[in-house]
Image (cartoon, rainbow, N blue to C red; front, side):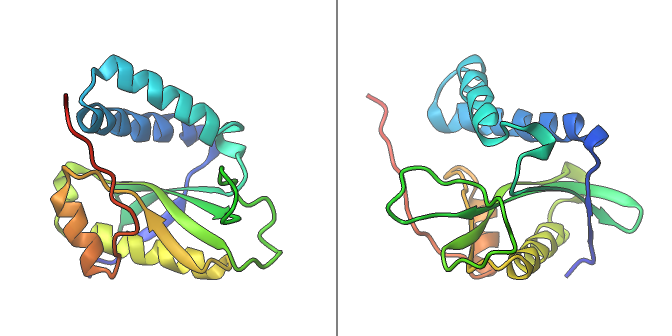
Length: 172
């Protein structure tokens, strides 16, 4: 397992960080939805406005760069939610001091830069995400993976993740 350090980003680093995350997400979304980059970008812009209504200061969000020694190898965005099973919408946790049996940590995004892939950095970062989850009172860790990414799916299975839902579609 590769040794990594998660370093919280500063507010001045946030614009670059979030641009990289949403650029990658837009490409993945376009492929998954079989739509244009323009349409995917509109969807992602709306998603960012909803998920990060206060930008860097949006409660419950943690933004990290992943380092191996002095080398930045990736980025990790975690969100802590407290979901009432009957609620339609999940809300980020505002107060981490109050315990909750429904609190979970969500891997909003993980990116390992191309030259550093397949070296164990993603595994190490996800194990660190689990540590953050335990330290903040979370009972589970969730993530989403696109169907066209079997490498990531294999990694997540290797780390003990299992499918909780599976969405399918068909082009007409």
